Picture 1: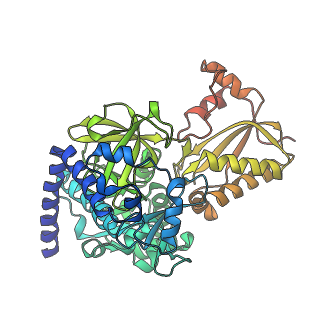
Picture 2: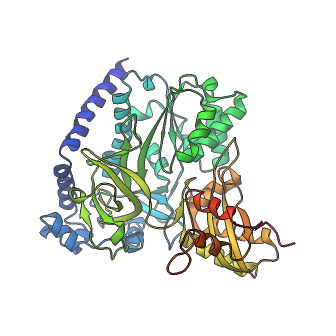
Length: 509
């Protein structure tokens, strides 16, 4: 009872601070930029870009160039080698793994003490504060919070630092007010063997009073099916009758909604979305009747935006600050953070739906991708994997596209590939194995989801009759010119349309 009173007091205090940036968003953002620059004046980066001379946003945008991971990779490599005071003044010992780079299997994003406390942990607190604002009679803290996170490992280049999934870093550094209700134990939560981890989480929590689930939808669904399998129950409410909330993020929840409703058949079950990534915590769903996200403006992150009509990576023009955004336009997100990322293009696109307060929806990526299961598969990964598979099977591809097959009725998800060959492989199965193996080699997140087929099953490859893609493009009035088949899609829209006009084979025999 005493703990709940303290928690309620903390939540009310935080809600007043959230109101502050709702009412004064531009002033709060100006203060964030000013503080980040001031703290970093004497870093190697700050000296290089003359932070001591920067007085305004215009100075900052003129002086500091736009960055993508490849541009700051050498700085991060030196941080991993235990050099300090490069991008940010405080000692950096955590590095969050994230896929999506064109040059490495994983990106390693620095995570500072300030980013942990003032961004990621504050984001977790705000999720609860905003939930209680909408559901004042909630009883989350009378039971346990089941957190499905990743794993960490000691940095082989420096025993004083650690590399891991962001979720694991957060679990390993949780404040007491969050740790006291979290389950399972850290020894289980941070296990790297996912098959064993899922089994152990299910066994250890099946008899606990779980009120909240926290995790990425894909892994959470795998766990919940394991819980049902072990318990022999028909649905989750028979296992955890007081379950009332799933806090999710990382991938779109749209493909998973119906499956969650099947195994949690309770109209009072609530779902709360957040937009958090290795680079920062950006948005929270703060309204009951809308999936729009509130832009969190006091987490030590300064935001800029590139209209997608003018997007050209680090050569983009027309970069604007928050005060200049327009509603219903697609923008690439640019951040400068208290983790030492400066004018960093994270690759996500957003569209604002409101300016008072600033609310938005996530619209996609600056590059073609699939990220339904947390695999973060990008075109560069795919092009390299297909090239290698073609060499290994003495085949040649004319065109291709890929999309997800969603999880349904306790079946795992997988990727569906539609391919036109100029010179087909003699053994399609061998081609599929090579494609899959090379994607796993190139992308650590894809590899994690493919381990023992726990989240992603082996890819399904369909061979299209030559000319199918041209036929589809012609039906859309897009044949010729610069028009081309989308390589990767997060939905099935393109693939289902192409299948409707095609002859499909799965073998050449």
